[in-house]
Image (cartoon, rainbow, N blue to C red; front, side, top):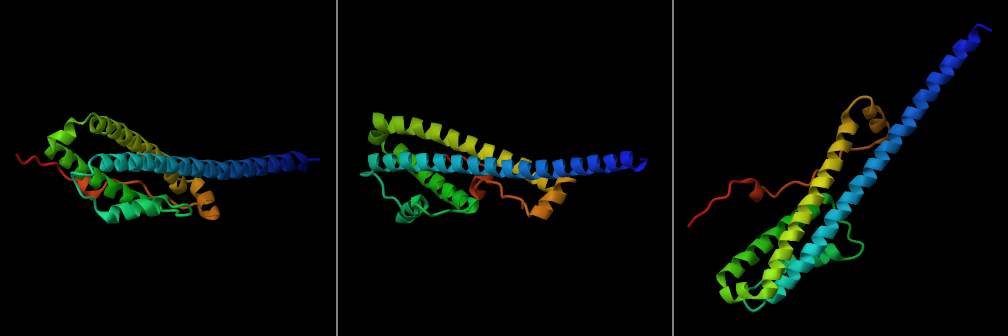
Length: 185
């Protein structure tokens, strides 16, 4: 009869450990779903930006040439079944940003094009799309940060190592955008 409280204590401790393990595994899986969801919102923003950029290119068709390499990559990224890694998406986003900057330079050089209401509307929409993309990137990086912290912090790292939950990559800025901006008048 003296062993009953000890047995109950052992069962309670084991039950707590099992509940903690299940809870931690479910927490990791929930975080991975949030990361995938936020990565998908980056895809949506990139697609919206591509669609908008395509319209801007059509509006500016008579004034500029666009590199076919970027368009080829855009088409590849949008093909069904093409699952790009976050690094590939990041590089693609950087290339589209450079194309967008080139377009804005062209718009500045051609006053007739700049004066077009359609182009002005598209520029406003571009600003909004860029803001949405930045917000999507921040949400993604926030989710990755929370997840990565849990992967490396004790005691959840025990479960992470056991179940092979690996750290995820952040969506980082293009190297060009990290530098200081110079104005050469």
